[in-house]
Length: 118
Image (cartoon, rainbow, N blue to C red; front, side):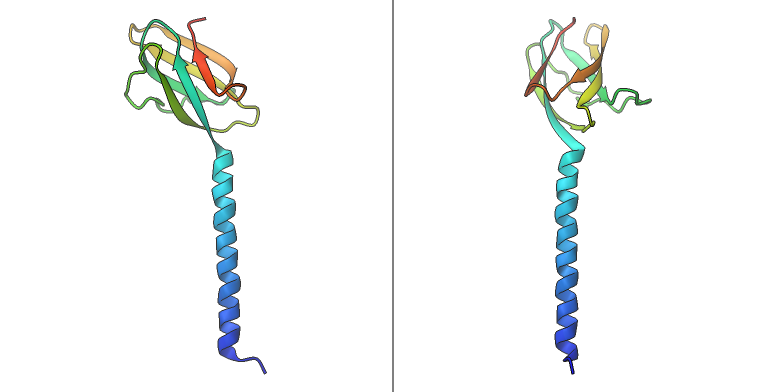
């Protein structure tokens, strides 16, 4: 006959192992869902808004700079939602009001992306 107390402990240990495994999978899954990207402002004007989305996505997310300016020749490291091909559409608004849209930018090819007017 199995001791009920030992049986309860065994079930509790198995459950704990299952929960910890789920936490590990969730943590690694999160790392695959986001990507650290460094953007450098290589223009002659400060950036006041920067948005990035997967190509083909309908809506643009909120401003990634969070109401901060990105000065000339300054850089910022951002966490973006990962896309399978590592391609992003970027919408940039500058201090002087002009805007640029860069489509299908590969942000995984290099550790930092130099943003230019061209």
